[in-house]
Length: 235
Image (cartoon, rainbow, N blue to C red; front, side, top):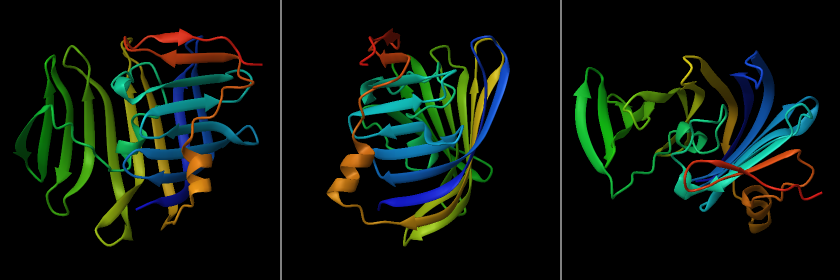
């Protein structure tokens, strides 16, 4: 079920000079689970000042304000490499409560009060915990772990709205990324006007095809080692 929504986003982060920054801006969102996602934020009077997108193969993040002017992209095979991005296109689809379970991973089940907990383990250890409220069976919290077993990112979901029968989307999304220096970046999203949509092939192509990084000052690709490789500008 594809859907669209309007909303607001509060982004708090530390810049390259370690100064705390905050941006509060309106957003528009389109999603076609499981892999297609597109969010655009109106920053500095540019309706596409920030764009996050994904399809079933890759994801991208572009930020147009000239003091940032950056474009980052990567393959879904590197989706666990999210510790360097304050606002991250690999986390937001799951932040909408749409969880894809890796069938090759080792999953265990436990309970804690009002929550059922799914824990994902890979060879290196715990990678993710999903907390499901046992009264309505909806995801309320997701924890992502680093290679040392520490909680790296926490996503909290609330205010679920009914999009269609048996399909709900959270209207309140809070994502906190804990940095190695002890500081935290955060993204808080509040959605409104969540409605199902019927997308045409032309709309799918426009929304879910990664655009070329023309006009950006900094262009990076995430490689298989979770390193950002700087690429040459196209303009």
